[in-house]
Image (tube, rainbow, N blue to C red; front, side):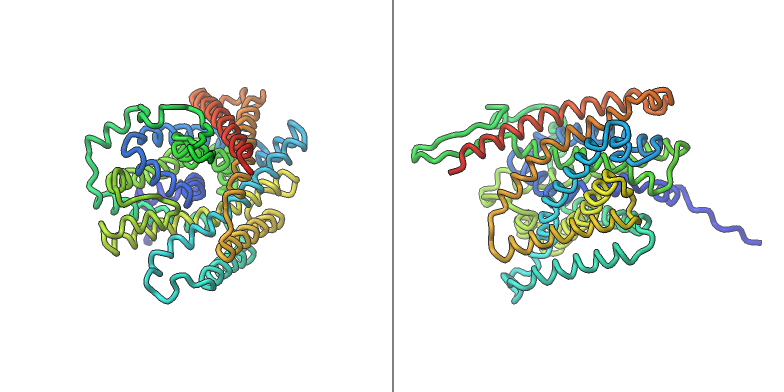
Length: 446
């Protein structure tokens, strides 16, 4: 009698991970790709250490969230409502869906940016109908799958694993072709601040000779890099994902391994993008700006050729689509759970709120493409909500972890708590800094 062939070690490892890879996919979206590219373009290899630090903090907070997911009886928003009052749970849920809704339009645009380089010189270049049709079809298919599949977690996990592989391949090939300096890369892991970034630690309003006032903030790209790697909202959602995978207290070791590998993949992809940008775009007089992921791809095309650029665009598309899909799920699940309606992908209310986020993001993106409106006000709004959300979510996880029952269980190691506390301190400082920048922006409005 033939016995079923047991999967090898690599296959078993892939089967045992998943939640943190989904988190990595929602975090590494178009904004992350542009942020990493901009920092590499402006500062060369000097900020590689920031990626390592942000990844370490993300591992700590995601590991804490995974422990809370298997130790607590309910989702984090519901637990917050039960233990601190419904007001706090609903506040977290409402803030999350506002943030996800505000950034969802960027994920829609990110999908278009990944396609744009292939349209150069074709009849579709500059077409007003192609972007609209693409977004309607993409969102329509996603909504049909959302409501048509009876079980969502496993298909989403498999898709995210595929997209992570595509991103790693696309970004790694381009990094190899860029031929970065090994010594310069190693030096970039030593913490330091470039002279232009260390002039002032706070943003400031500068008035030119013509009387025009602008906000100068040399560290803003670095702060954006931290925010797009150390994503508190992404870490918060890990608690929901481990529950949907079916993990319990007996799976804490699998949870830690999943966190290290999944978030480690996020950090690796960020490093690959920044190293490529530093090697090719830093001190390049032909590069005036990097406004989108499409701009990054176009800058690489003359050097690497269309084939390598196509692979890089495939990585951009994978990042945009994965973030596009899971970002909407995060917002929908958080709001639903905060209202006591459940927080898993397969329940009716999370699906309904996820659909709202998808439609809102699509309509905003179509409006931007059709009218050429300035997206600055939407971005400022999203940043303003994030000022509240990040400390609230990180502080909520630490507060739940300090409950007597969890402390008595001894299942949350001290090192996880200490890293999470350091992460909370950082997001609090960055939130205050962002609030000050927004204040400066608002005071300079005509």
